[in-house]
Length: 235
Image (cartoon, rainbow, N blue to C red; front, side, top):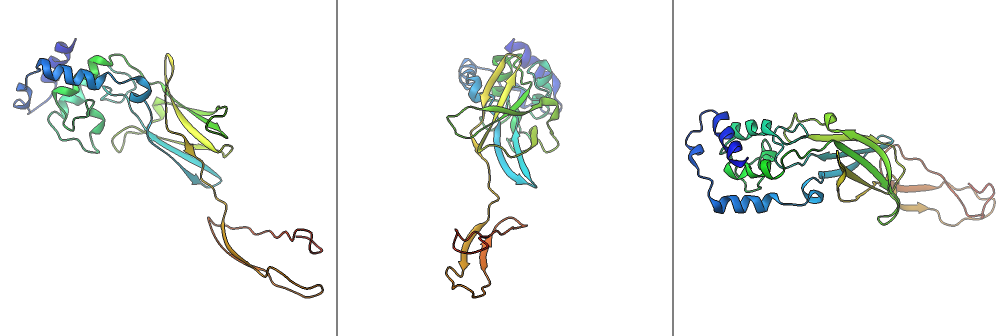
């Protein structure tokens, strides 16, 4: 299978005949095989996962990972040799980093092995889960299919808008066989203002006071006063 993939890569590109003369030695096969034999829970975990405030909710963002799936269609197969040949011998950058399946920084012969080693490996989508403690019970918030990704800026990227309801969130990579990988836990951001000072802190009965606060946070800010039972009315 590896020889067939190499032949396809050699035949699929244009204008890089000098690069295609590189031999696939037993040493290079061994090194790329070792690189490719990474467990699914690491290999398929969502990359660059993040969470941010967005209006009244949160926006979760992450990127696709499936070494060997160079055309980013969700499954690894013969079609993935075409992007490999197209970018043959290129240095890795943001515009092609998902094609560097071996992780050696150059797109070339070493990147054929991840196709063979992960052959037919498929990512069908992602499930977002929420919890109130990292060791607590995780529950499903929503799901995103692989077709909802956007590859306009290079590596397939995903965005999901969710309603606040948990302290922690994580992104679960889904395959036809079930859960395959988990992102790092994401801490939900807070839109509560930071209060630096409140004045006055004391007063006398029948006197009139104007209360002020110095605070910062995401606008609009809303203020409410509670005098702890020391005044009437109390708020």
